[in-house]
Length: 129
Image (tube, rainbow, N blue to C red; front, side, top):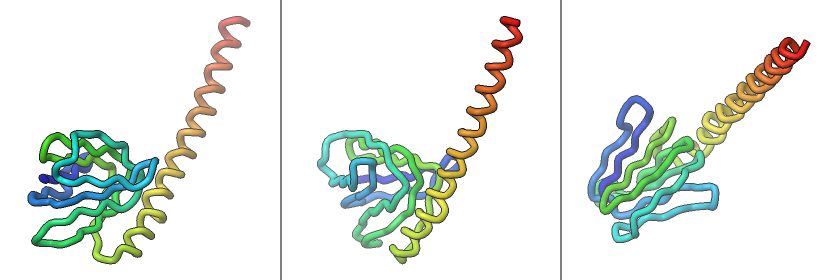
């Protein structure tokens, strides 16, 4: 398989000769072998593993995103990615950085929703008052 991992502003990795890929979804681990049917999967923050004859198993921490397999090509588009040799450190990075940022984003969205709701209420009061 041919694997390409895309970030918003650059190509993080581009590999050919990939024999297997394992990623994480909301439903659990998701594995791809070369002859698997075409598919799409929503990825959660976690560890993506791919294997090549030259490199062996490679571990990449990825943030949420999308995986698309069409024929021999697998395209992974994520917000952030980090490669590492130590699986424990990568897992910790996912928990510390990616999930913490997601929580901050949710807090910001919550505050914005409250501001928008307050604005709409005041606007409605002005319209009817």
